[in-house]
Image 1 (cartoon, helix red, strand yellow):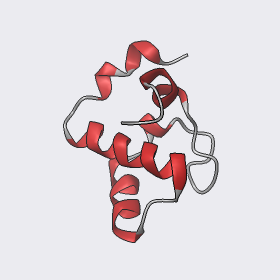
Image 2: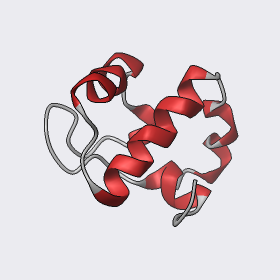
Image 3: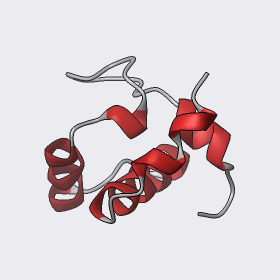
Image 4: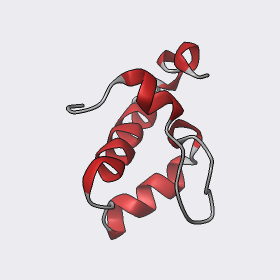
Length: 69
């Protein structure tokens, strides 16, 4: 994960769509997989969504729990 830090990743919220205002780390894995198939947004949001999918795929969400505000 380059260009952003874990506390930011733990607290960043989805800016649009069905899950608007939900933390990225709390998005359903199926939604992240849908993005992976259709294409992640450009820029930092896409990078973060890609990272969240990787974290969830590997069962590591618990690592970000202490960083949530």
